[in-house]
Length: 455
Image (tube, rainbow, N blue to C red; front, side, top):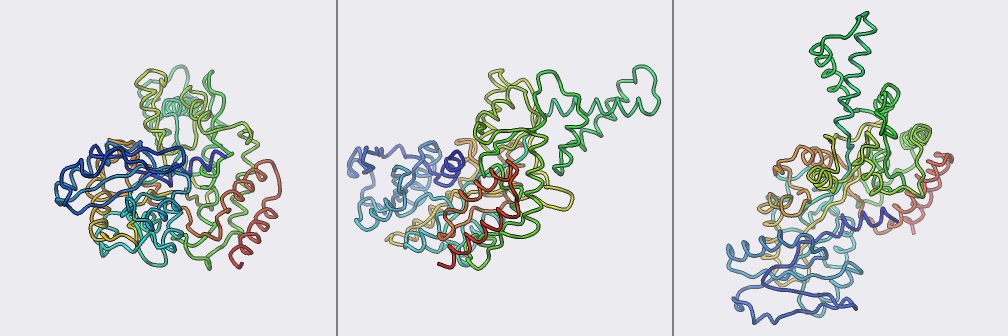
């Protein structure tokens, strides 16, 4: 399913391979080192291995490994491996001692499993790095397990509302002209008056609730090439979760407490009823729609609003550069479900964990802290991925909104016992979208998850 691919991409993040070492992955998943360690200078220096799975962040880790190595007079050797059975591969290497993964990248949802297996240990920063000075509560909750910080938050993925600013300006002008006509204006109103009034509509035009989107849909005389007001990937739980995120509790704030599960409650059902009703306004087929197709429709100017993840920034900027996207755009926090029901986006955090089996835990902690604190400003320019550290300046207004949404998001839960929760929830959303009874479906899901936790 597409949502699984999205979560894997966001949760199993990596920092790429340094120029001083090249590692290949064989067909059987076994690591093959291209050159002997002795080929590199500083063989007598303290050395740690940094494991990761995604080579898209190569330049970032190259820079970090070299600068940290020079600063501390040590060696950091990155090791690239496959995504499949990542924790199992880490465990085997830890037991064999072959290229021992002293520190590694992992999705926050896998931290409980890693910690219980001894592959993640409590951080040694004493809260100086993993604290509220640098990170939001969402980031800290993402790397917390049973009250302990067991990793360092590096980057995140979440969703926001993406809108075509050019179209929204057109709508604002339309509303200004309609208001002036209703007040008895005759003929063409002065453009300065229209523009001033339109600006006030535009400022109020960023939807604060789902009802605001429906109001725009009801009052907008759409340009000829626009096919609809809003479309999003209703088949992917990552783009749907915001409807119930504020009220559906699985594991509490840190997603690690089996005693804090509240799935079947009145607010969740009310939010799902709103979601179901939207099928009447935005007709989308769950078996044919995809995130890529929706974003392409946005680029082609066929829709005004959609729900997007952080990758959309570079995609739109590239489309503007090559001329395939001829509009201005903006991003905003996800609207509330209604005036009485709040929303909350789902988030995943790429975290740097220190192996409990490492014989260099102090150095590994120092490098992990260096990555998320000192190197955070280089993450977006080099990779397009947004840092979890709050006070970085990616020099992009859209990135700033994503960071604010992340700060108020719900971290992907860690509980091993509820590992199939997301698949079951995705099925629930699909059935609700197709008109099935939300209350019955929520009760069934709550009963199923409760049975799993009690087993």
